[in-house]
Structures are given as C-alpha cells and as structure tokens.
Length: 383
Image (cartoon, rainbow, N blue to C red; front, top):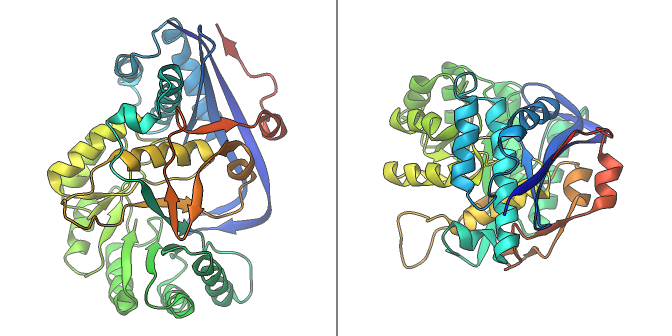
C-alpha cells in the first residue's frame, strides 16, 4: 500500500461582518486543507492552522518525500517530515504543514482499517465531551458590552456549560465587559477570558486581580508566549488558572512551557503543533507535569474532529470516581467553512457532544462546498 497523491487547497470565506481580537481584525476565514489518497482509493483529510498560502507551500515542499510511502506507517512518515524541516523550521508554519498531513494520514488510516481514529490512538476514555463556546470577539457595535452580554446569553440558552470571551482592549474596558458577561450568564457557567498576549506582566496582574471576583475559569494567553518567566510569576499573583500553548510547537516547545511552570493548562493546536502524532506525545508530557490539557481549535470541521478524537482518547488526570469535565473548544464565530465543508454524525445535546464510532475522523467532505470556497483552482497535484 502506498500514498498515491497529495493535494492541497486554500479555502476562503468572506465574512458578512468583520470581527477583532486584541491584535487585529478578521474580514475572512482562510484555511489550507490537504487530501491524501492511497493507491487503494482511500482518502484522508487534514488541515493546517496558520497562513494558508504558506502552509500550502510547505505541504508541496514535503510531498515529493512522501508519495510512495506506506500511509499506515504514520510515525515513520512523521519523522521523515520532521527531519526534512528540522534545519530551518523547528517552530512555526512548516510544523503546521506537517500537522495537516499527519491529521490526514490518521483519517486515512482509520478508513483503511475501518476503525475510528480514537481507537487507533489507544481507545475511548469517555462517551461524551463538553464543548465550551468560543466567541465574544470585538465588533464595531457602539454598545459593545451589551452586545457581548447578549451573545453570551445566547450561548447559555443553547446549553453551553462554559464560554470563552476576548479581552485585551484595555484593562478598564475588559473589567466592565467581564462584569456584564458574568451578569448575563449567571454564576453557574464557567467563564474563560483570552487576551491573545495583549498585556505586559504588570497589566496582566492588575486585570487578573480585578476579575477574580467573577470566578474566571482560566486566563488564556495573558502575556507574550516568549516570556516564560513572566508567566510563571503571574501564576503566583492570581488565583485564576493560567492557560497557554497555542503558539507552541512540538513536544520540545511544551517541554519549555511546562518545565518553566508557566501555565496550569496547556492548549496545543493539533493542526499546528505536529498533528495527532505529536499531540499524543505532548499529552504524555503533560501527564508527567500534572498539567491539564485542552486543545486549541480553530478552523473547519476537520480540525474540530481531530480535536474530538484526541480528547476522547486522552486521560483526564488525576483519576477519580467522578471524572472531571473534559472540555473541547467550539468556535462559534461566523465561518461558512466550518458549517458547510464537512458532514458528520456528531450530536450536540444538553451541553455535551456524544462520541460516535464512524471510521476515520468521522466526517465526509462536501465536494460542493469545497468547490464553492476553493480559491486555488489550479492546485498542484503530485503523483
């Protein structure tokens, strides 16, 4: 059995309304996905997180070394990709290219072996997962606080047990927005805040102390991901758990994050940090340090499905009779790619997502949606 071809596609969805976070504004969702086909006719799909055109170039750079390989030998293929990029891309966008191909290979292997990916990863540890709603970005609404509170209440009414909101405009505005959102959703729903590294240490301490009374579940990326010692110091200055890691790459980056005692919760993005193969290694590393793990997820149903199978398989430590909640990020911002590209039997009901046993990553790709959003009409095909 051999890899017959690898195709990559850039998909783009123009948003009806732009939205912002602490760093910049989004007016579109642009994503690179990859299709790996075996000589048996089986197909696997993957996705890379980051600038789509650069990820596509990375996939095309790696493809000549992969065509002809046995697709079932995923770790062997991962090591080929890693060695081919090690000298100039130990971190960053080429790791996202590796991730996209790796995710596709797991999907492909599941279909070839007629098994769900979570089983191939080691087995099902739970029958359901609790999604938290990611939204509450900044818009040009003149009454932003009211708009955020209204949006949060909508997620609450849909049954979400946790909600993540953006902060990072200014400390004063953030405090007011957190107060309004907490007032809208009440005391029983977990509320996370995400600054996308908008603040310096002094500012992050000030904001954390100010919002502690609102029972914040975690404070995500309060500081630049470069400042490990500052993260470690911040943890000693607040009762709010600190989360981060979406900007880390490979187990080596997470080794630094964990050994520096920077965070309570690590957030690897499977489509950026090395795929499911490397995410499993990172999960093992997290267990050594006793850190919680909640993957960052942003993109299409491909990325979400990969995260679902990963969370289905990981251990929630420590073990106890009544298992703690295992969260998964569920992006709720406008995204036609997420809504239309894939079809699955995933069922959201009463605030939880039920795990099903569909083979591979558990979805099919809507070819009409692929054509609708594809902008690389003359994509390169290696055979």
